[in-house]
Length: 233
Image (cartoon, rainbow, N blue to C red):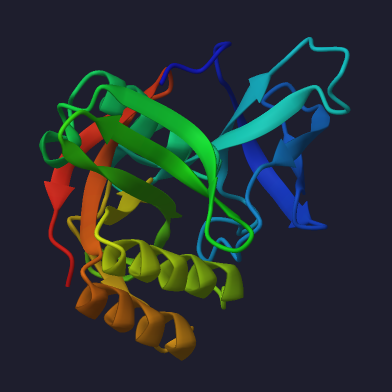
């Protein structure tokens, strides 16, 4: 997934109202950027962090900039745009880069399923069960190179797990794919202390036959692509 326009550097002044961020530009100016992330963004929303924002000239958008990346120590980056995860995974699925999910005839995004949900991707192919793939963007890092999900309580996430579990019980493939959108992590775990209910729902889903997998990302100032598969602790 390539960014549509070249990113510009800045320094985070503050994030507020969940979806807004004030950014200091190198020349001394200040802009308001859209923050496409409803989560807590622990460690990624501290004032003074170097960030990268994407300008746009779309008259339909209220803001002229969107916050995309946080620059991390050691030449690493984190993508704060949760919507980017589906674009990265979608591109990888279409290119056949996720071996466990390759070989399907069609890849359908945003399909209705369950009581009131949409699955991120529905994979269909002749002679094989449908595969329901739910993607979660992971950016929390609290210790070592371990990425964790979720970064805040998520009833919606627990509901998705229950619906995936039902898909598996019905004889279809149900897959939960954690996409780690920061380049300084090498494994993934559940943040059970943050959301015990989500951790319990994950255990129930796994017992029902839901497949759990995780992938890293390769992040640069121009694009984000799928990285290697990571172990899930």
